[in-house]
Length: 368
Image 1 (tube, rainbow, N blue to C red):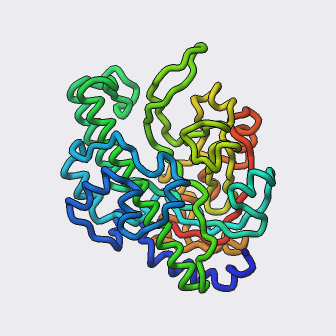
Image 2: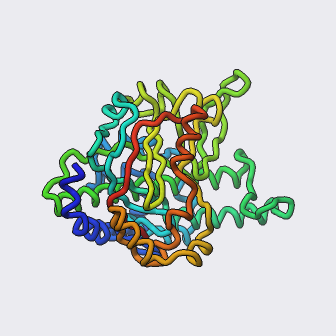
């Protein structure tokens, strides 16, 4: 419970900061050979489990059980492999974070009970992805597509694309799936070190069960109804998350009665939310929901407007302690840099593409 955490919050944040490296280019604790990395890119969270990180129950509470089987590590460049090799088990910078939160409000008692959420309990939310490896995969294939198809007709060069069924399109998709597997494994290892940190500082990590691990920058092949006919399509989710409604067979069995958990984080000083996907989301948005509030200010504008030291001091006055790799990282993520998360949730719920279950408020934040 939150009252047990607060007296040791500073010590806990320090331990998490040491166990889970954060920041631009930060190297991880685990050192991989190239062969190990290629195996990880194929197996995802299964690799983490086989190497002593996480539990079988974690994989059951992960989208795709933590493994994209379309992945082909051979489609990933040597440069991407070089960037990913030292970064496993790291948060990264930007809006990535590790946040200790308290369950502040429950909106659906039955669903919250199934998810393991209870008012006053402590949760840990982890937001990170495939690090430099995923970024390099995107950079590599954008360059390949520019050379093959050009981009002069597009408003932004990064909108360049290739037909999915083309040779280049298939190479990119298989490389992207390998990147997703890296992200799954990365988060699984961070979960392991979070448990270790709680056990060291609090004396126990008993009861720390994974609620859900969901992707938010992906393209996936899914079945959806279009004009009354079920079709297999490629759904692009950029800054979005899957939101299947109740009964979908691609969800963990224990969640099929309520719908897929949808995690929507706020910024350091605002609440995050746990929602559930809905049948209406299947009809309106290809089973997709927002993944966060979205930025109001660019990072450059935020740095001009805010000082990290001042932001951290103001957050502490609100009961939120921040541990970060740099003051600049805190300034970039100041609360006014983002849209109002409460309004985002209200709009999502009113549109029927998400059902609110719980509101989570931060008490401690580790930032890159």
